[in-house]
Length: 138
Ligand SMILES: [Ca+2]
Image 1 (cartoon, helix red, strand yellow):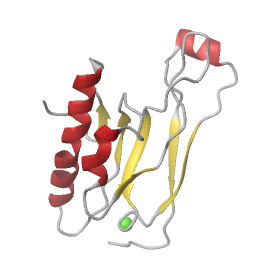
Image 2: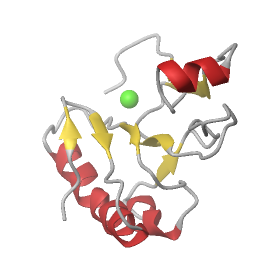
Image 3: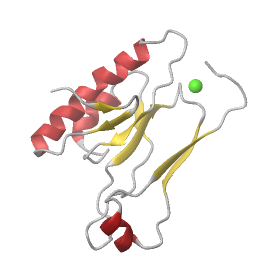
Image 4: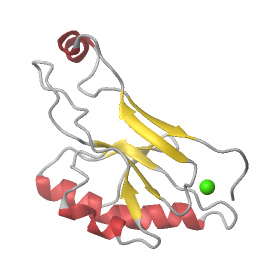
């Protein structure tokens, strides 16, 4: 099983059985490494997506074991149930601190009316990533 990418950067994990999702998370370290290997000059890789799996789950152990270490930079509930309550922390940014020194912060955007939002738009809240740099670092 190989992870699927939409566009250039966004990965939407399978929404199948827990076993399917685990296998996919366990395969993403190879994708991460191949994207990084595609450039000898720029080593910054940011894996972004709806991963349908908490970043604390054991299935991420292979990605976390990539050297230098890959860390999850967003671990807050971003999916909503039909009542508008936040349910799961499935949307993540993964990166290596030693390369993405530009990292500043991440978060979940504010939604004034989560019931209206989840009913008419999406069961995922918008998320953001803030990077900061005063120069080209690599
Ligand atoms: Ca960098």
